[in-house]
Image (tube, rainbow, N blue to C red; front, top):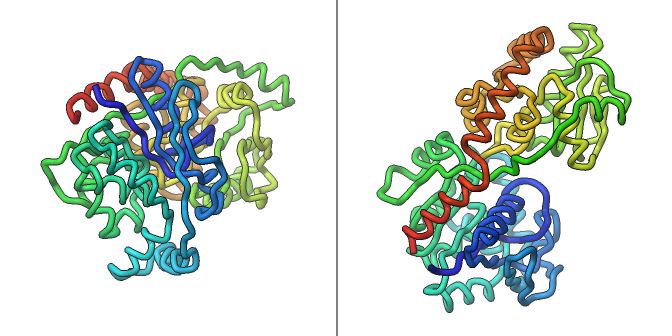
Length: 387
């Protein structure tokens, strides 16, 4: 059996998103007896300077996984930012600009040389799609490459450079069918292996609604949002809708916010900031509904945790992934505009027994599809097929 190497732009105990998925999947595969390594840069994390080495280069062992870090070199940040600004504003870029974008994103030739020198010894799992570590790395050993793209319906996914690299990989792995359909629509039909494997979820959580209410002095019915408060998570829309909802209903319902980000929050919301994980689960259990307004999700661990805590969810209809979760699980509702947002909240607040049944259905969905034993088995089978 070949060694499994997860290739990521940065690695460590980084919360949320692809970073957490890479670490947790690597650790669970290692715990199941697989030989697992991580190939990454010395960059600290997404929010750091991508041209600065934070970690020392070399090899460490982190929670049972061998981690190899490689130095990055200087990059032309101004050139990268120029192209990225165009993309962020939805403007088309030339093929030459795409090359500037990917080449001046992360410059780590030592990592790519390691892949080239050891390509026969590994099956490489790249995550996520849009970083230079994936784009360049896949093309070095395409027949031994698996990509977990964490694909969103965004302008970046339609760049020619990604179609060039991702379609060369031996396999693409998706979290839900909606993500796979998006990939098929962008990259075209192919004989390439494209599988929906899901994502592992820690299902052994406990949640106590009474404990949360007593500790934080929260009474009455409330909705909850858990995560970063930023435009990318669509929280400005959430705040706009929630403020209008409160003004029209004039009720005592509140919105609790857990996480970090924009300080411009509605007066009708309560910001609790970062809480210990146990308290987050307790808060979810105490909530009438968890609201996830984001339209750019490739899985949404927060939904899974809310369901494990027994709480229904309300998601944006424009997010194919979270809408699919809700439809498959019967674990909540979705909204496309303000009128639906208000109507679904009214229903969930007025029908706690039905909302509770949605939460229980969601929990059964998570346990039936995303327990770690199931996910690890799927990955072992795929790796054996590619290797």
